[in-house]
Amino acid sequence: MRQYFGTDGIRGRANSTITPELAMRVGQAAGLVFNRGDYRHRVVIGKDTRLSGYMIENALVAGFTSVGMDTLLLGPMPTPAVAMLTRSMRADLGVMISASHNPFEDNGIKLFGPDGFKLSDTTEKRIEKFINADLTRRLATASQLGRARRVEGVQARYVEFAKRTLPRGLDLDGLRIVLDCANGAAYKVAPDALWELGAEVFAIGIEPDGMNINREVGSTAPEALQAKVRELRADIGIALDGDADRVIIVDEKGQLVDGDQLMAAIARSWREDERLSKPGIVATVMSNLGLERYLAGLGLETIRTAVGDRYVLEHMRAHGYNLGGEQSGHIIMSDYATTGDGLVAALQLLSVVKRSEKPVSEACHSFDPLPQVLKNVRYAGGDPLGDARVNGAIEAGRKSLDGNGRLVIRASGTEPVIRVMGEGDDADLVTRVVDDIVGVISRVAA
Image 1 (cartoon, rainbow, N blue to C red):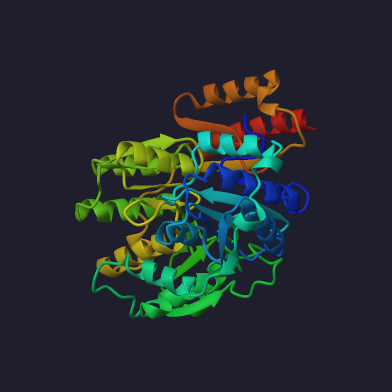
Image 2: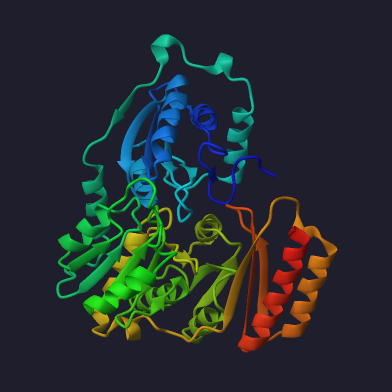
Protein backbone atom coordinates (compact mmCIF):
# COMPACT_ATOMS: atom_id res chain seq x y z
CA MET A 1 0.00 0.00 0.00
CA ARG A 2 1.19 3.50 -0.82
CA GLN A 3 0.91 6.20 1.81
CA TYR A 4 0.44 9.26 -0.37
CA PHE A 5 -0.24 8.31 -3.99
CA GLY A 6 -3.65 7.14 -5.16
CA THR A 7 -4.82 6.19 -8.63
CA ASP A 8 -4.21 9.73 -9.92
CA GLY A 9 -1.37 11.30 -7.98
CA ILE A 10 -1.69 12.73 -4.48
CA ARG A 11 -5.08 14.21 -3.66
CA GLY A 12 -6.94 15.51 -0.62
CA ARG A 13 -8.33 18.51 1.22
CA ALA A 14 -6.17 21.59 0.65
CA ASN A 15 -4.24 22.80 3.70
CA SER A 16 -5.36 19.72 5.59
CA THR A 17 -4.13 16.68 3.65
CA ILE A 18 -2.33 18.66 0.96
CA THR A 19 -0.30 21.02 3.14
CA PRO A 20 2.57 23.34 2.14
CA GLU A 21 4.95 21.08 4.06
CA LEU A 22 3.82 18.00 2.14
CA ALA A 23 4.03 19.83 -1.20
CA MET A 24 7.56 21.00 -0.41
CA ARG A 25 8.63 17.48 0.52
CA VAL A 26 7.06 16.09 -2.65
CA GLY A 27 9.11 18.61 -4.61
CA GLN A 28 12.30 17.62 -2.82
CA ALA A 29 11.62 13.90 -3.11
CA ALA A 30 10.62 13.95 -6.80
CA GLY A 31 13.50 16.27 -7.61
CA LEU A 32 16.00 13.87 -6.07
CA VAL A 33 14.49 10.83 -7.81
CA PHE A 34 14.71 12.58 -11.19
CA ASN A 35 18.20 14.03 -10.62
CA ARG A 36 19.85 11.69 -13.09
CA GLY A 37 22.95 13.33 -14.47
CA ASP A 38 25.51 16.12 -14.29
CA TYR A 39 23.44 18.92 -15.84
CA ARG A 40 20.87 21.52 -14.82
CA HIS A 41 17.65 19.66 -14.24
CA ARG A 42 14.28 21.30 -14.85
CA VAL A 43 10.65 20.77 -13.90
CA VAL A 44 7.54 22.38 -15.41
CA ILE A 45 4.59 23.13 -13.13
CA GLY A 46 1.03 23.83 -14.25
CA LYS A 47 -2.13 24.22 -12.22
CA ASP A 48 -5.87 24.65 -12.47
CA THR A 49 -7.75 27.63 -11.04
CA ARG A 50 -8.20 26.62 -7.40
CA LEU A 51 -7.35 29.19 -4.74
CA SER A 52 -5.03 26.70 -3.04
CA GLY A 53 -2.98 26.38 -6.22
CA TYR A 54 -0.92 29.45 -5.28
CA MET A 55 0.05 27.94 -1.93
CA ILE A 56 0.93 24.53 -3.35
CA GLU A 57 2.79 25.99 -6.33
CA ASN A 58 5.07 28.08 -4.10
CA ALA A 59 5.71 25.15 -1.77
CA LEU A 60 6.65 22.91 -4.71
CA VAL A 61 8.99 25.58 -6.05
CA ALA A 62 10.71 25.71 -2.66
CA GLY A 63 11.10 21.95 -2.67
CA PHE A 64 12.42 21.61 -6.21
CA THR A 65 14.82 24.53 -6.04
CA SER A 66 16.16 23.34 -2.67
CA VAL A 67 17.47 20.18 -4.35
CA GLY A 68 18.92 22.09 -7.28
CA MET A 69 16.15 21.76 -9.88
CA ASP A 70 15.18 24.74 -12.06
CA THR A 71 11.44 25.38 -12.11
CA LEU A 72 9.37 26.64 -15.05
CA LEU A 73 5.93 27.90 -14.07
CA LEU A 74 3.18 27.58 -16.68
CA GLY A 75 0.23 29.07 -14.80
CA PRO A 76 -3.30 27.71 -15.38
CA MET A 77 -3.03 24.98 -18.03
CA PRO A 78 -4.86 21.72 -18.77
CA THR A 79 -3.28 18.54 -17.46
CA PRO A 80 -2.60 17.20 -21.00
CA ALA A 81 -0.89 20.50 -21.86
CA VAL A 82 1.50 20.03 -18.94
CA ALA A 83 2.27 16.49 -20.13
CA MET A 84 2.87 17.75 -23.67
CA LEU A 85 5.06 20.67 -22.54
CA THR A 86 7.11 18.40 -20.28
CA ARG A 87 8.29 16.60 -23.40
CA SER A 88 8.41 19.68 -25.61
CA MET A 89 10.55 21.66 -23.17
CA ARG A 90 12.79 18.66 -22.47
CA ALA A 91 12.04 18.79 -18.77
CA ASP A 92 13.02 16.00 -16.41
CA LEU A 93 9.65 16.14 -14.67
CA GLY A 94 6.20 17.65 -15.08
CA VAL A 95 3.78 18.59 -12.30
CA MET A 96 0.07 19.40 -12.46
CA ILE A 97 -1.57 20.93 -9.40
CA SER A 98 -5.20 19.85 -9.60
CA ALA A 99 -7.91 17.74 -8.03
CA SER A 100 -9.57 17.28 -11.43
CA HIS A 101 -13.37 17.10 -11.02
CA ASN A 102 -13.34 17.41 -7.21
CA PRO A 103 -14.70 20.56 -5.47
CA PHE A 104 -12.42 23.55 -4.97
CA GLU A 105 -11.66 22.64 -1.34
CA ASP A 106 -9.62 19.68 -2.60
CA ASN A 107 -6.37 19.79 -4.52
CA GLY A 108 -3.74 17.39 -5.72
CA ILE A 109 -0.32 16.85 -7.25
CA LYS A 110 0.08 14.81 -10.46
CA LEU A 111 3.56 13.94 -11.71
CA PHE A 112 4.75 13.19 -15.24
CA GLY A 113 8.08 11.73 -16.30
CA PRO A 114 10.27 13.26 -19.04
CA ASP A 115 8.34 11.25 -21.64
CA GLY A 116 5.09 12.96 -20.61
CA PHE A 117 3.58 9.79 -19.13
CA LYS A 118 2.32 9.44 -15.57
CA LEU A 119 4.77 7.78 -13.24
CA SER A 120 4.79 4.05 -12.60
CA ASP A 121 3.88 2.59 -9.21
CA THR A 122 7.55 1.73 -8.69
CA THR A 123 8.68 5.32 -9.20
CA GLU A 124 5.92 6.65 -6.96
CA LYS A 125 7.06 4.29 -4.21
CA ARG A 126 10.62 5.61 -4.54
CA ILE A 127 9.32 9.15 -4.17
CA GLU A 128 7.32 8.17 -1.09
CA LYS A 129 10.45 6.82 0.59
CA PHE A 130 12.14 10.18 0.10
CA ILE A 131 9.07 12.08 1.36
CA ASN A 132 9.38 10.28 4.69
CA ALA A 133 13.19 10.44 4.88
CA ASP A 134 15.54 13.00 6.41
CA LEU A 135 16.83 14.84 3.35
CA THR A 136 18.99 17.39 5.16
CA ARG A 137 22.21 16.05 3.69
CA ARG A 138 20.72 15.76 0.20
CA LEU A 139 19.88 19.45 -0.19
CA ALA A 140 21.75 21.57 -2.71
CA THR A 141 24.54 23.92 -1.65
CA ALA A 142 23.97 27.66 -1.87
CA SER A 143 25.59 27.87 -5.30
CA GLN A 144 23.65 24.88 -6.66
CA LEU A 145 20.14 26.01 -5.76
CA GLY A 146 17.59 25.97 -8.57
CA ARG A 147 16.01 28.99 -10.20
CA ALA A 148 12.32 29.64 -10.88
CA ARG A 149 10.66 31.67 -13.64
CA ARG A 150 7.31 31.98 -15.35
CA VAL A 151 7.11 30.92 -18.99
CA GLU A 152 5.20 33.06 -21.46
CA GLY A 153 3.37 31.86 -24.58
CA VAL A 154 2.63 28.33 -23.41
CA GLN A 155 -1.12 28.70 -23.94
CA ALA A 156 -0.61 29.52 -27.62
CA ARG A 157 1.70 26.51 -27.97
CA TYR A 158 -0.98 24.18 -26.65
CA VAL A 159 -3.70 25.73 -28.83
CA GLU A 160 -1.57 25.13 -31.93
CA PHE A 161 -0.85 21.57 -30.83
CA ALA A 162 -4.56 20.84 -30.36
CA LYS A 163 -5.51 22.36 -33.72
CA ARG A 164 -2.96 20.23 -35.55
CA THR A 165 -4.69 17.04 -34.39
CA LEU A 166 -7.55 17.71 -36.83
CA PRO A 167 -7.21 16.20 -40.31
CA ARG A 168 -5.57 18.54 -42.80
CA GLY A 169 -8.03 20.88 -44.50
CA LEU A 170 -10.83 20.25 -42.00
CA ASP A 171 -12.24 23.20 -40.08
CA LEU A 172 -15.27 23.86 -37.89
CA ASP A 173 -16.97 26.50 -40.03
CA GLY A 174 -20.72 26.46 -39.62
CA LEU A 175 -20.81 24.75 -36.23
CA ARG A 176 -22.49 26.47 -33.27
CA ILE A 177 -20.75 25.14 -30.17
CA VAL A 178 -21.54 25.73 -26.52
CA LEU A 179 -18.36 25.12 -24.53
CA ASP A 180 -18.30 24.61 -20.75
CA CYS A 181 -14.81 24.99 -19.28
CA ALA A 182 -15.85 24.26 -15.67
CA ASN A 183 -14.22 27.51 -14.50
CA GLY A 184 -11.08 25.44 -14.71
CA ALA A 185 -7.71 25.09 -16.37
CA ALA A 186 -8.93 25.34 -19.98
CA TYR A 187 -10.96 28.51 -19.58
CA LYS A 188 -8.70 30.38 -22.01
CA VAL A 189 -7.19 27.77 -24.34
CA ALA A 190 -10.31 25.78 -25.25
CA PRO A 191 -12.44 28.72 -26.47
CA ASP A 192 -9.45 30.08 -28.41
CA ALA A 193 -8.80 26.76 -30.16
CA LEU A 194 -12.41 26.27 -31.28
CA TRP A 195 -12.76 29.89 -32.43
CA GLU A 196 -9.52 29.75 -34.40
CA LEU A 197 -10.83 26.65 -36.17
CA GLY A 198 -13.86 28.57 -37.38
CA ALA A 199 -16.60 27.57 -34.93
CA GLU A 200 -19.14 29.96 -33.48
CA VAL A 201 -18.36 29.52 -29.78
CA PHE A 202 -20.61 30.30 -26.82
CA ALA A 203 -18.51 29.72 -23.71
CA ILE A 204 -19.69 29.22 -20.13
CA GLY A 205 -17.62 28.34 -17.06
CA ILE A 206 -14.88 30.78 -18.08
CA GLU A 207 -14.93 33.09 -15.06
CA PRO A 208 -12.86 31.33 -12.38
CA ASP A 209 -12.62 33.03 -9.01
CA GLY A 210 -10.59 30.38 -7.21
CA MET A 211 -13.61 28.78 -5.58
CA ASN A 212 -16.10 28.07 -8.37
CA ILE A 213 -14.22 25.36 -10.27
CA ASN A 214 -16.62 22.49 -11.11
CA ARG A 215 -19.42 24.25 -9.21
CA GLU A 216 -22.63 23.60 -11.17
CA VAL A 217 -20.59 23.51 -14.37
CA GLY A 218 -18.27 21.12 -16.17
CA SER A 219 -18.44 17.47 -17.16
CA THR A 220 -19.69 16.34 -13.74
CA ALA A 221 -22.53 18.91 -13.70
CA PRO A 222 -23.70 19.17 -17.32
CA GLU A 223 -27.19 20.54 -16.63
CA ALA A 224 -26.16 24.15 -17.35
CA LEU A 225 -24.63 23.07 -20.66
CA GLN A 226 -27.71 21.08 -21.65
CA ALA A 227 -29.94 24.07 -20.97
CA LYS A 228 -27.68 26.44 -22.91
CA VAL A 229 -27.53 24.11 -25.93
CA ARG A 230 -31.33 24.01 -26.05
CA GLU A 231 -31.62 27.75 -25.51
CA LEU A 232 -29.20 28.65 -28.31
CA ARG A 233 -30.21 25.78 -30.60
CA ALA A 234 -26.55 24.88 -30.85
CA ASP A 235 -25.20 21.98 -32.86
CA ILE A 236 -23.22 20.53 -29.96
CA GLY A 237 -22.22 21.14 -26.36
CA ILE A 238 -18.78 20.30 -24.98
CA ALA A 239 -18.10 20.04 -21.24
CA LEU A 240 -14.59 19.73 -19.82
CA ASP A 241 -13.69 19.06 -16.20
CA GLY A 242 -11.53 21.17 -13.92
CA ASP A 243 -8.20 20.12 -15.41
CA ALA A 244 -9.57 19.39 -18.91
CA ASP A 245 -8.39 15.80 -19.19
CA ARG A 246 -11.96 14.52 -19.63
CA VAL A 247 -14.90 15.57 -21.80
CA ILE A 248 -18.63 14.95 -22.03
CA ILE A 249 -20.70 15.87 -25.09
CA VAL A 250 -24.27 17.16 -25.35
CA ASP A 251 -26.08 16.63 -28.65
CA GLU A 252 -28.28 19.21 -30.40
CA LYS A 253 -31.31 17.93 -28.45
CA GLY A 254 -29.60 18.54 -25.12
CA GLN A 255 -29.00 14.84 -24.46
CA LEU A 256 -25.77 13.60 -22.88
CA VAL A 257 -23.20 11.64 -24.87
CA ASP A 258 -20.80 9.88 -22.48
CA GLY A 259 -17.29 8.54 -22.94
CA ASP A 260 -18.50 5.13 -24.12
CA GLN A 261 -20.40 6.68 -27.04
CA LEU A 262 -17.40 8.89 -27.85
CA MET A 263 -15.09 5.89 -27.99
CA ALA A 264 -17.58 4.03 -30.18
CA ALA A 265 -17.84 6.91 -32.68
CA ILE A 266 -14.09 7.49 -32.85
CA ALA A 267 -13.32 3.77 -33.06
CA ARG A 268 -15.77 3.36 -35.95
CA SER A 269 -14.26 6.33 -37.78
CA TRP A 270 -10.67 5.22 -37.20
CA ARG A 271 -11.52 1.69 -38.29
CA GLU A 272 -12.93 3.01 -41.57
CA ASP A 273 -9.79 5.11 -42.10
CA GLU A 274 -7.52 2.21 -41.06
CA ARG A 275 -6.08 4.32 -38.24
CA LEU A 276 -6.54 1.80 -35.42
CA SER A 277 -3.16 0.28 -34.58
CA LYS A 278 -4.94 -2.89 -33.40
CA PRO A 279 -8.51 -4.14 -33.97
CA GLY A 280 -9.91 -2.95 -30.67
CA ILE A 281 -9.89 -0.41 -27.87
CA VAL A 282 -9.00 -0.42 -24.17
CA ALA A 283 -11.75 0.52 -21.69
CA THR A 284 -12.35 -0.08 -17.99
CA VAL A 285 -14.66 -2.38 -16.06
CA MET A 286 -17.10 0.56 -15.79
CA SER A 287 -17.76 0.86 -19.53
CA ASN A 288 -21.21 -0.26 -20.58
CA LEU A 289 -21.71 -3.74 -21.95
CA GLY A 290 -23.52 -2.11 -24.87
CA LEU A 291 -20.21 -0.65 -26.04
CA GLU A 292 -18.58 -4.05 -25.98
CA ARG A 293 -21.42 -5.61 -27.98
CA TYR A 294 -21.40 -2.77 -30.54
CA LEU A 295 -17.66 -2.96 -31.14
CA ALA A 296 -17.85 -6.74 -31.45
CA GLY A 297 -20.29 -6.22 -34.29
CA LEU A 298 -17.60 -4.16 -36.04
CA GLY A 299 -15.03 -6.87 -35.51
CA LEU A 300 -13.32 -4.89 -32.73
CA GLU A 301 -12.33 -6.19 -29.32
CA THR A 302 -12.93 -4.41 -26.01
CA ILE A 303 -10.13 -4.92 -23.48
CA ARG A 304 -11.08 -3.99 -19.90
CA THR A 305 -8.76 -2.74 -17.17
CA ALA A 306 -9.16 -1.50 -13.62
CA VAL A 307 -10.71 1.95 -13.19
CA GLY A 308 -8.27 4.79 -13.82
CA ASP A 309 -6.92 6.28 -17.01
CA ARG A 310 -3.38 5.34 -15.97
CA TYR A 311 -4.31 1.63 -16.14
CA VAL A 312 -5.95 2.10 -19.54
CA LEU A 313 -2.82 3.81 -20.81
CA GLU A 314 -0.49 1.20 -19.32
CA HIS A 315 -2.34 -1.53 -21.22
CA MET A 316 -2.38 0.53 -24.40
CA ARG A 317 1.38 1.06 -24.23
CA ALA A 318 2.13 -2.55 -23.34
CA HIS A 319 -0.01 -4.07 -26.09
CA GLY A 320 0.08 -1.49 -28.89
CA TYR A 321 -3.43 0.01 -28.81
CA ASN A 322 -3.86 3.67 -29.80
CA LEU A 323 -7.41 4.32 -28.56
CA GLY A 324 -8.85 3.83 -25.10
CA GLY A 325 -10.65 5.59 -22.31
CA GLU A 326 -13.28 5.67 -19.63
CA GLN A 327 -17.03 6.12 -19.55
CA SER A 328 -16.44 9.28 -17.50
CA GLY A 329 -14.88 10.99 -20.52
CA HIS A 330 -11.17 10.29 -20.20
CA ILE A 331 -10.36 9.54 -23.84
CA ILE A 332 -6.76 8.57 -24.61
CA MET A 333 -5.45 8.77 -28.16
CA SER A 334 -1.79 7.83 -28.00
CA ASP A 335 -1.13 9.11 -31.52
CA TYR A 336 -1.54 12.59 -30.06
CA ALA A 337 -1.17 12.59 -26.30
CA THR A 338 0.32 10.74 -23.35
CA THR A 339 -2.76 11.16 -21.16
CA GLY A 340 -6.46 11.91 -21.48
CA ASP A 341 -7.09 15.17 -23.34
CA GLY A 342 -10.62 16.56 -23.27
CA LEU A 343 -10.08 19.20 -25.94
CA VAL A 344 -8.33 16.88 -28.40
CA ALA A 345 -10.99 14.21 -27.88
CA ALA A 346 -13.68 16.81 -28.59
CA LEU A 347 -11.88 17.83 -31.78
CA GLN A 348 -11.71 14.23 -32.96
CA LEU A 349 -15.43 13.87 -32.36
CA LEU A 350 -16.13 17.13 -34.18
CA SER A 351 -14.15 15.69 -37.09
CA VAL A 352 -16.46 12.67 -37.11
CA VAL A 353 -19.54 14.94 -37.05
CA LYS A 354 -18.30 17.21 -39.84
CA ARG A 355 -17.38 14.33 -42.12
CA SER A 356 -20.62 12.44 -41.50
CA GLU A 357 -22.76 15.50 -42.27
CA LYS A 358 -25.19 14.20 -39.66
CA PRO A 359 -26.42 15.81 -36.43
CA VAL A 360 -24.57 14.84 -33.28
CA SER A 361 -27.55 12.80 -32.04
CA GLU A 362 -27.08 10.47 -35.02
CA ALA A 363 -23.32 10.59 -35.53
CA CYS A 364 -22.57 9.92 -31.86
CA HIS A 365 -25.32 7.52 -30.84
CA SER A 366 -23.85 4.18 -31.85
CA PHE A 367 -25.63 1.84 -29.43
CA ASP A 368 -28.33 1.72 -26.79
CA PRO A 369 -26.58 1.29 -23.44
CA LEU A 370 -27.76 -1.39 -21.06
CA PRO A 371 -29.46 -0.04 -17.94
CA GLN A 372 -26.68 0.88 -15.55
CA VAL A 373 -26.97 2.07 -11.96
CA LEU A 374 -24.05 3.67 -10.09
CA LYS A 375 -24.30 4.72 -6.45
CA ASN A 376 -21.66 5.96 -4.03
CA VAL A 377 -21.37 5.26 -0.30
CA ARG A 378 -19.13 7.56 1.72
CA TYR A 379 -17.34 6.07 4.72
CA ALA A 380 -15.21 7.52 7.52
CA GLY A 381 -12.60 4.79 7.85
CA GLY A 382 -11.91 1.10 8.00
CA ASP A 383 -12.47 -1.38 5.18
CA PRO A 384 -16.19 -1.94 4.54
CA LEU A 385 -15.40 -4.15 1.54
CA GLY A 386 -13.60 -6.55 3.84
CA ASP A 387 -16.72 -7.10 5.95
CA ALA A 388 -18.37 -10.51 5.64
CA ARG A 389 -21.86 -8.98 5.52
CA VAL A 390 -20.89 -6.81 2.55
CA ASN A 391 -19.31 -9.72 0.73
CA GLY A 392 -22.41 -11.78 1.35
CA ALA A 393 -24.63 -9.06 -0.13
CA ILE A 394 -22.38 -8.80 -3.19
CA GLU A 395 -22.47 -12.55 -3.76
CA ALA A 396 -26.27 -12.58 -3.40
CA GLY A 397 -26.48 -9.75 -5.96
CA ARG A 398 -24.39 -11.67 -8.48
CA LYS A 399 -26.62 -14.71 -8.08
CA SER A 400 -29.70 -12.55 -8.65
CA LEU A 401 -28.29 -11.27 -11.94
CA ASP A 402 -27.59 -14.88 -12.91
CA GLY A 403 -25.15 -14.09 -15.70
CA ASN A 404 -27.44 -11.49 -17.29
CA GLY A 405 -25.56 -8.49 -15.96
CA ARG A 406 -22.47 -7.26 -14.17
CA LEU A 407 -21.55 -5.89 -10.77
CA VAL A 408 -18.50 -3.73 -10.11
CA ILE A 409 -17.90 -2.71 -6.50
CA ARG A 410 -14.73 -0.80 -5.69
CA ALA A 411 -13.24 1.77 -3.37
CA SER A 412 -12.43 5.09 -5.03
CA GLY A 413 -8.75 5.85 -5.37
CA THR A 414 -9.26 9.59 -4.89
CA GLU A 415 -11.80 9.96 -2.06
CA PRO A 416 -13.28 7.87 0.83
CA VAL A 417 -16.13 6.50 -1.26
CA ILE A 418 -17.21 3.01 -2.29
CA ARG A 419 -18.74 2.89 -5.76
CA VAL A 420 -21.39 0.27 -6.50
CA MET A 421 -22.22 -0.24 -10.17
CA GLY A 422 -24.64 -2.73 -11.64
CA GLU A 423 -25.87 -3.23 -15.19
CA GLY A 424 -28.03 -5.68 -17.04
CA ASP A 425 -30.97 -6.05 -19.40
CA ASP A 426 -33.53 -5.81 -16.57
CA ALA A 427 -33.39 -2.26 -15.15
CA ASP A 428 -35.64 -2.99 -12.15
CA LEU A 429 -33.58 -5.99 -11.13
CA VAL A 430 -30.31 -4.06 -11.44
CA THR A 431 -31.71 -1.23 -9.29
CA ARG A 432 -32.85 -3.64 -6.57
CA VAL A 433 -29.51 -5.43 -6.50
CA VAL A 434 -27.53 -2.17 -6.25
CA ASP A 435 -29.85 -0.76 -3.57
CA ASP A 436 -29.50 -3.93 -1.47
CA ILE A 437 -25.70 -3.79 -1.60
CA VAL A 438 -25.61 -0.04 -0.92
CA GLY A 439 -27.86 -0.56 2.09
CA VAL A 440 -25.54 -3.15 3.63
CA ILE A 441 -22.41 -1.09 2.95
CA SER A 442 -24.08 1.99 4.48
CA ARG A 443 -24.94 0.10 7.67
CA VAL A 444 -21.43 -1.31 7.96
CA ALA A 445 -19.84 2.08 7.20
CA ALA A 446 -21.96 3.74 9.88
